[in-house]
Image 1 (cartoon, rainbow, N blue to C red):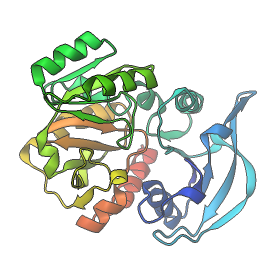
Image 2: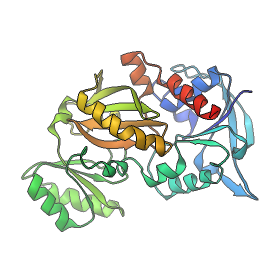
Image 3: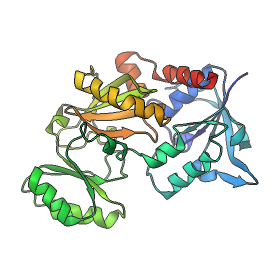
Length: 314
């Protein structure tokens, strides 16, 4: 029987079909005969024991082509799906958390990916805290004196919002940088949650290395090399993408993470490594499928669906 797949993401019309990983995941599901539906997190409704959302069935996805066929809007009973994908982009705020809590209500009868409770409990920059031996010196706080002391020790630091994304609000503060106080005040005023402060890793100039894992196993990746004059290694800020070969240290990191990711139900994850240090574990809507396929020829979307079908058989 064909699978029924629901994908919770931002509006399809705004997606970049050349690089969007959600589109690649959906297209592979369609090629395997699944009925694929798209809806937005803001449209979720719970009533009388049913979780529903207005959705459209989408067919003939073939990225990077932007053409597809979308059906009429219908009320989708999410509890009747076989697979639900959480693929909306951050910010990871209370609206995001609310959608995860609603999806938890059907997670006992539908395969929800990634596991909504695990996304909620260990987003992006939090899961790395379980692996202090693999991460650079890190401080999470809103205490200015604690940040001052950390900077005094490490001199060259990165400060960013705990739940930031895509390089937004990231400041590189070098030793003696007169922008330190202003940057710290700006971040504290703009964010109610703690900040994350890390020792700056100059190896980022050679690339922030994104490694994609499926069921805890590395399957591909690439390096994002910052543009000239830019401290942030993000696609949005003009980083150049280069092929990478995993180092022994990176394989060690993947081996340490693998069992934890599998146990948490985090089927598709993207980790960031700089200079042999784990800096982020991306679990909300990891990207990089198109880049990995272009650079390495590996079809990550197919590997993802192989893993899903194996889970469903179990």
